[in-house]
Image (tube, rainbow, N blue to C red; front, side, top):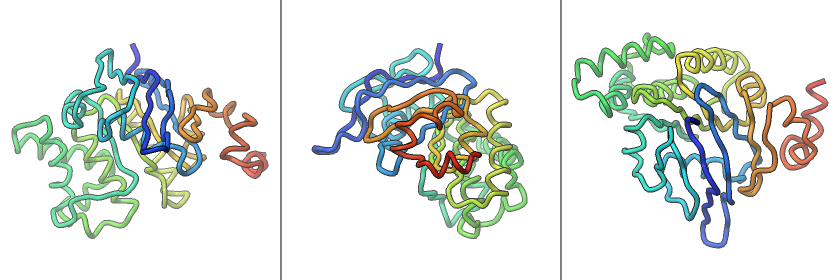
Length: 243
């Protein structure tokens, strides 16, 4: 049984077909990458999977259960969590309290939610700023906070939308290590990413979409050599840089 899959998923905005008849699957314990040019429909895919947007047609299956018509909070309760491309923590409350908001999705005891949130902050390396307002965090740490809030909901599947954007190479390397650790703890990961070093280091498989249509799928080292992918997204400069 796959952790997550779609069958002929489609979503349009007026006359624009953002996602077209998309089939995909995320295996249990897998890290799956989703890449493509800006405007290709990647975030729309995540919005449909997490039910922030209703689909026009097609089916979304989570651990064998049809979640196509569920609301976002119901999907979260089942174990599907996500981060957002634009990081928006609750700025006026502490880092710890931000994570507790996520923990309280499933944990009704405030005391237990606080203990769980502290443990998560340690996992993501934010325990030293737990009492600081989220407004004081720089972008790299806000991205970790976004992940911490998602992890606090105890997900089985984590959707990550460009968590490496804006990070320097050292920060990217640190995040790769953290995501591998999270994955080893039993959480399947589906990530949208433009930082190809991260995609190559993390992904078991990669799906490439362009204009909402899947144009390639497979192991990352094979996908980046695909002529259609090079023309639509990577460019010949990428292959040259790979040596």
